[in-house]
Amino acid sequence: MLNNIGLPGLLLIAVVVLVLFGRGKISSLMGEVGKGITAFKKGVSDGSKEIEDATADSARDVTPENDKDKV
Image 1: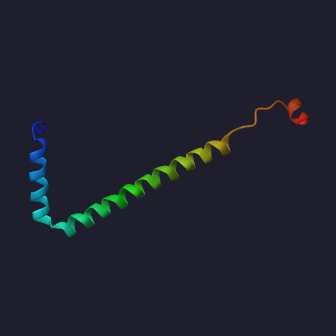
Image 2: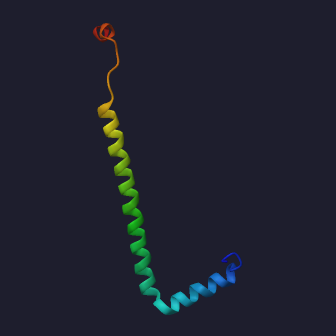
């Protein structure tokens, strides 16, 4: 359905959106989208760090008892 829009169609849509909402409204909206993306990336990295910490804490020492005395 949207395969044949092309560059002129996209420019027309951008101009219509700019006229309807105004530059200030679009600018603030893009700022909020940027903040949302940043918060999402931070949440993902915090979650993966928690998972790594949990797996590191649950890791067992499998060294045989005889070898522990040598170290």
